[in-house]
Amino acid sequence: MSNCPPNVTPPQPGRLSRFAPWTGQLRDAPRFLALLALASSAGLAMAQSGWTTAPAMGTGRLYQSATLLSSGKVLVVGGIGSTGAAVSSAELYDPTTGTWSATGSLITAREAHTATLLSSGKVLVAGGASAGAPLASAELYDPATGTWSATGSLTTPRTEHTATLLATGKVLVAAGFLQSAELYDPATGTWNATGSLASARAYHSATPLLSGKVLVAGGIDNGGVILASAELYDPGAGTWNSTGSLVTVRAEHTDVLLPSGKVLVVAGIDNSGFTLASAEVYDPAAGTWSATGALATGREDHTATLLASGKVLVAAGVDNTGLTLASAELYDPATGTWTAAGSLPTACREPTATLLRSGQVLLAGGGNPDVALASAELYSPPEAVAPAAHGCASAGGPLLPFASLLALLDLTPRRRRNCATRA
Image (cartoon, rainbow, N blue to C red; front, side):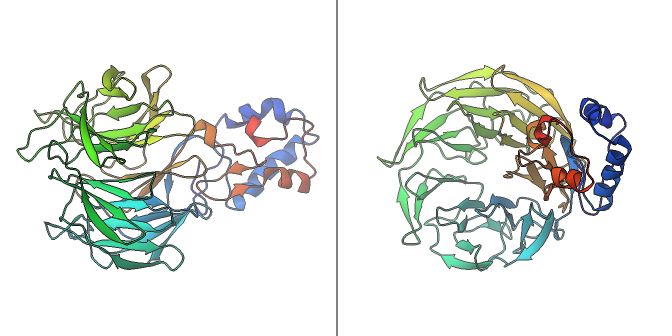
């Protein structure tokens, strides 16, 4: 799709051929073409799958966080700015308008922190680093007021940790070059220690399972050794237990909970510093890992997003030569295979990736390679480009009321009135 307004992409050559069976039913096909021109001049565009450029953020950022709010907006927070120092600023992306706006700034500038949407709709930001030192402070963002307030501090400063929302509404923060873990209670605004992991680790993954347990896998220990071990946290007991080890040691990988309840981990690096193309799947019922199809391109510092279709989009990152990537790939759990998914307009590493309500994926910021980027891109899966509300989506923005415009110009087709059937 195109980014609109103002950058509108006209229909591609041959694109109208997809409408041939439909336009043949129009009483006045030339006026249908006039309708397309009208839609374009109004700053709207027919939807198309793939990558498009979105408006840039106000601030370039690397190692920032992004959180989908209850409103459908995306909150992007902190990170390293263009000067190389952590920033305190935050921005909101509104998918209905396709625009960014500033919101309240953090009390403490930070990068490599975690951000968790609480059941209250507020966002908890915890830990991270500033001026090279790990932080213990935590803050709450209130979308209703657009402001931040301090909440209880972590018992231990930490960065490169993980944060997982539990079914109880509490937040589990684990590791970050540490063995310790702690729980945040939104009701009291306080942190309390919980069971410790068997291994200190950072750059690991933490995935909430359907059982309510949390799977932590891989990462790098305090001695610089990349791990294959995995552990399960039981919220009821507050303890960790070992589970099956990864097939391949890896850190800086990504993880996705699949609709089946299994967990997909993708790529990362091994102990030689080699960028991995391999992927594997964890089966909670068996407690074991098995290899699945490999990516076409090995990568680290990438993103992985579960789409509405059940497929997984992996995008961006850095390859084994240190090249910043623009490529993307799709994983199909039904076949265990990967296919190409086009290229981003801007190559980047460590962007954030957020699944929007439209089914699109917003990538924002990151670095190329270490220059903080303000750029943003939208990925539109084929299933997301034709919403069922008789409209065609513009780039992250409002629906084009296609049926209404047809009626206005007396161009209502005799069949296939639903835009979704044409995409």
